[in-house]
Image (cartoon, rainbow, N blue to C red):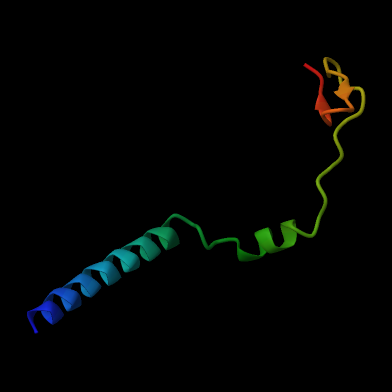
Length: 67
């Protein structure tokens, strides 16, 4: 029966930590722009510029810039 007291106390402590973390997220602005990330996935990244100065040629075997 004494284990129940420890488990209730532990659950209250863990709930308090979770609540504190949630409030910290709210204050730091984590939930300010909910639609930005949802809309960002719908758009493609801009293509890389062709012939940029100082660019290394692509290595077709590796699919990346040759070093």
